[in-house]
Image (cartoon, rainbow, N blue to C red):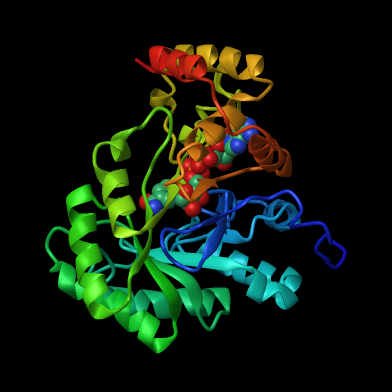
Length: 330
Ligand SMILES: NC(=O)c1ccc[n+]([C@@H]2O[C@H](COP(=O)([O-])OP(=O)(O)OC[C@H]3O[C@@H](n4cnc5c(N)ncnc54)[C@H](OP(=O)(O)O)[C@@H]3O)[C@@H](O)[C@H]2O)c1
């Protein structure tokens, strides 16, 4: 592969949105490296996807300690690609990592203790070859560890300069409020919440979005395409090269049910009437809410990513369209 030089017009079409009440702007579309960047995946393909992303103004790449498989390999591959392609561009990138799911054996490689988070961030920085991450998240709530301890570890990282900002992922509305209060007292405000949110998974509408708005926290919606279900991919069955068909994918074949696909078919028809693909409509639908700072997609090809970027051309919905979507999803 030739040496990568980013396109000069890379900032022309992307929209950047303020993350809560912080100084940080995030691209409306961000790229996640949960799948497609592990050591089971095609390295060159992953590299092309990252080049295409940055060429189109996607400045934010989201990782976690355990992304792969094998766990850690997405960060290793990303570190390699950073070195090979993005050397002169570090200050144009927002790189995030996380810890909170099981990463290594024993009592110190999982959940939310200070012991786990401190060791994990050091490992992530090493794998990616970075001095600091832009955002470090606690990946999921830990019901046993005092919130003060977990938030204290996040505050420590900012003071140490190992993370510029901190966030939480998949915390309930109630725990988000508690975490936010603790972080404010420590002097390190919570920058961002990363919840699962899509047309088909609406839990965040039940209090969480109100809390983040009140607290001045931004948000980034993960699995916005329901891992591919909200695209044209599964409308005619399960393709061999899809996440649902792969043994390493988190989407199980039994999640691609007739009921879900029938809804996707109807949504697809509506998307076509709007002049969009289903993936584009699913992303636009999330971005219509100003509380959603960014939509965090995955992609197994540059074409998918380009398709998803097309969503930015039409972010508005008529009342009738919104009503039709609700009727389909009922
Ligand atoms: N905080 C957390 O706990 C958490 C959990 C999960 C994810 N995340 C983050 O969110 C990111 C995105 O999650 P996700 O990968 O589940 O998101 P997603 O965007 O819902 O699904 C991505 C998958 O959908 C398919 N796809 C994407 N665009 C397509 C298009 N235009 N046409 C057809 N198929 C398309 C591809 O699957 P195929 O392989 O089938 O082509 C792609 O890998 C992750 O990488 C990670 O950074 C965070």
